[in-house]
Length: 158
Image 1 (cartoon, rainbow, N blue to C red):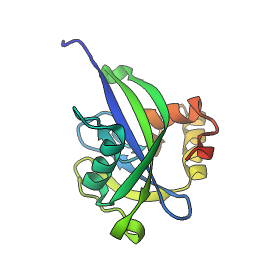
Image 2 (cartoon, rainbow, N blue to C red; image 1 turned 180 degrees about the vertical axis):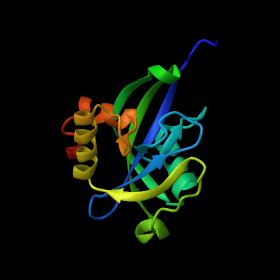
Image 3 (cartoon, rainbow, N blue to C red; image 1 turned 60 degrees about the horizontal axis):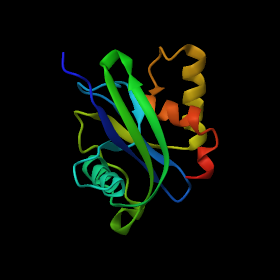
Image 4 (cartoon, rainbow, N blue to C red; image 1 turned 60 degrees about the vertical axis):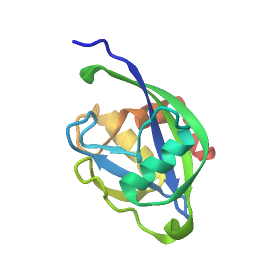
């Protein structure tokens, strides 16, 4: 087996005017299947984290966004998949024609679909997942779990 490497992931926290965030359920052959996630992906060589957040959001949802700032960093070790990520959470605002546009599922092989959730709704998923031991569907992707654990007041920065 190859020696695992640490990769950089970027999660785009795309907000609407009322403060809801774009989230979708992972699917396909990657890790985290069935878990809620923000749009995002791997940082590419030569790319800034803000550029990555904008690119990944456009590729996955069709939304044009302006990445504003990195608000958190998590250390995410997926023991069962032998994967290790440093995840950068980037707050983004919709811009241009995307200001009133709804997210589209442009990579249906990777995401079941996109929807809007408030931070309280995301926290409710975390609380339920914690109470149930994470065994149910409708759970959060590990970077979001670590975000909530490591930054209990993160909503103040987003």
